[in-house]
Image 1 (spheres, rainbow, N blue to C red):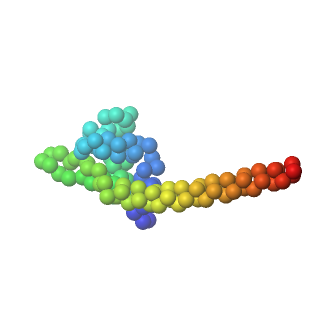
Image 2 (cartoon, rainbow, N blue to C red; image 1 turned 90 degrees about the vertical axis):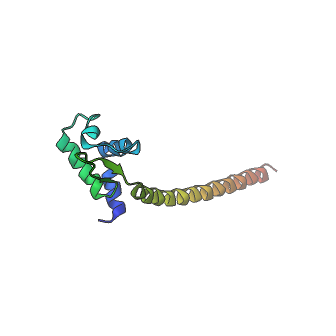
Image 3 (cartoon, helix red, strand yellow; image 1 turned 45 degrees about the horizontal axis):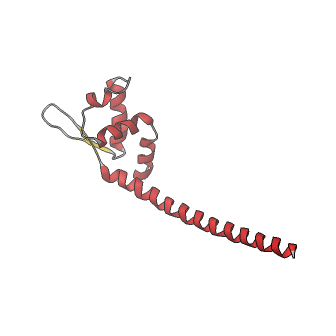
Length: 116
């Protein structure tokens, strides 16, 4: 599976999105990440492993601690992909708006011609 697919798959889960939100505020250990959830530490560890495999987070070792860090570049790749489609959609909506204005103007002209 390509990295973009892994990213969106990992982010499809609300718990994993919440973990990413926590890590956006700074590094945290698995214990710290599990605190806001009603989940066991092994369950949180599974979520973290999925985020790690997708390249969204990494872990380091500092003495006995293994803090997790958010990997911004992976998120940036997803944002760039989304922005491409936002631009495409904006362009399509602008073209549709122009078409609808032209159609409306044409209808108004036809209505005036029918009244005369």
